[in-house]
Every structure is written in structure tokens, then in C-alpha cells.
Image 1 (cartoon, rainbow, N blue to C red):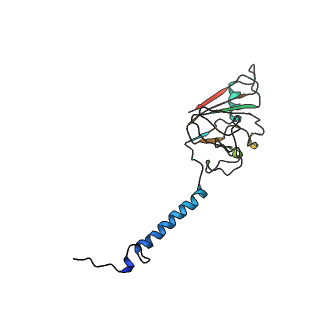
Image 2 (spheres, one colour):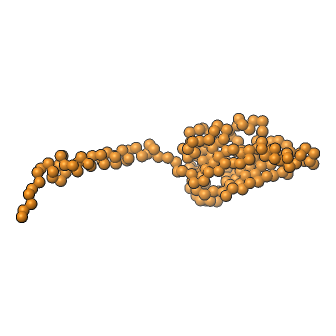
Image 3 (cartoon, rainbow, N blue to C red):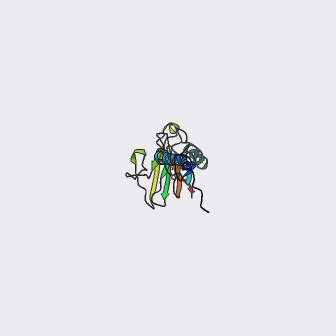
Length: 192
């Protein structure tokens, strides 16, 4: 009628209790997670990735084919490269990766000095042209314009030109255009 008392080593949380030995690894895992998580904190991952299409040397060849040398206004160098990025939502972060030194393996955690992170408020890792505080609000428009010298194009990693890659943490829209520096030619592409 009366329950038999348990031996002392099996009581609630005594030192020899199985619960005690099962709790130790669990507590160790929680402690490791709490102390090491900041070391592995990463930037937000991108939801969209873009490549700026039509490198300027190819654009020059295309314009030359459309407007041959006997045209009233022959195609002239340099090529003007124009890309606009429309930011839809505040808090968007854009990672901009120059093609000249190869692409990042993980664009949201860049290791190359030419890759910039825009919109995080840290001007030390880059800021888009026209945004000195590196804060991108809703309806911001980033304009990237460079005059591309075709002879030195492959050696200058600071130009915003065809072949560059960028990614964003929220939805954005982008437009690409290029033309020669002295005539009325224009070729446009739009990405949504």
C-alpha cells in the first residue's frame, strides 16, 4: 500500500542522477551558442542578384555596327556607362562587387577590398555615389555613371561598368544604358 522509497542516488537531481548527466551537455551547448554567436554573425543575405550586362567594348562594337564610319556622326570613345538602381524599401543593403578582381564567393560577406556594402550606415565599407551618410531610404535612386576608356577598362576596378555584380537584401529595380561620349547614340536595357 505504501510506495517503497527510492535509493538516495536516484532522487530528483542528485549527483548520480541520469537527469544530471543529461543536463550537462545541454547546458554546455546553450553556453556555446550564447558565447559564440556574435563571432559568426553575418550580413543579411541577398534576395536579388544583378550583373551589369553588355560590357562597354561590346557596346562600342554594337554601336559601330549600327552607325558605321561613314555616318554623319561616327562613334567616338570613351563610352559613357550609366546604371541606375531604384531602392524600394528603407533598410535595403546593396553589395557591389567589381568584376576586375573576380567575384566574391559570398557577396554578403565580402573579402576583397573593391567590394562595397551600401546602405548599412558604415561609410568605411563603401557608400553609393550621392549618399555620403550611406543610408538608403525608400524611393532612393542610385546613379552610377562612368566614362569608360576601352584601352584601360580591364585594369580599373573603380569604374561602374559592364560585368560588375550587385545584390540587394530587398527588392530593387535597375536600368542600364550606354552611349558614346560625343553623339546621340543610346542603348538601354531594363531589369526588374
